[in-house]
Image (cartoon, rainbow, N blue to C red):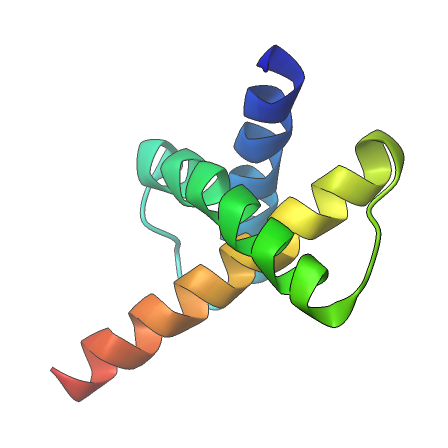
Length: 79
């Protein structure tokens, strides 16, 4: 459980660095990483990709967080 939280926190931080813009601030980036971990797990399961070890879970969480941030950016652009 603690490892999942730490990986989600790091994924949020990485997403803040990788995505265009200035991010949403460290707290929101971290929360996006935590939610992204759940989304990433779903995406990987749908694609049949297994995430092994801490590096795999970090990649999975980061992919989910990037997908979430991209969705938020798209919605903000429309509104």
